Image 1 (tube, rainbow, N blue to C red):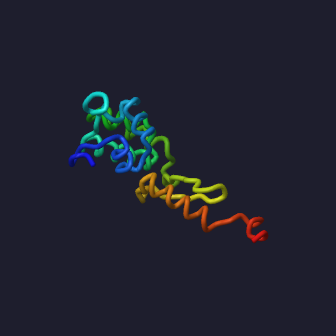
Image 2 (cartoon, rainbow, N blue to C red):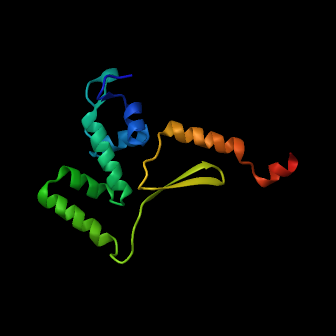
Image 3 (tube, rainbow, N blue to C red):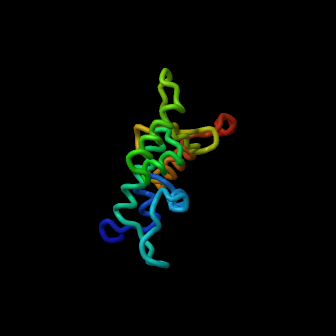
Length: 144
């Protein structure tokens, strides 16, 4: 375990409820700062986690990554423009909500509202394994 406020990519991803690949993509796209340190000593700090959680929350509200980048990096005017851009995209009369869809096993999916934080990928794998053990297709039930 890393010292408090110092995370490896796996820990940061788990705490943020995203994959390591997503963390790398966000760094590449400028949504997250590059990790601190060099080589095997690379790590992320509390600021990285806070920013990751902010990016994820904005994305779950339906904001596109380009607008998130502007909202986070830009101040004042840029932030107002990004917010105005998002408001114009959604019709005022229609309520909008973001959902995550996870296929746990073929034929079984989990839909989670953005009002809830997804568990870590490890926990989702545990849920998928539970589903594999307890749900069987109809044709397998007939054979048993």
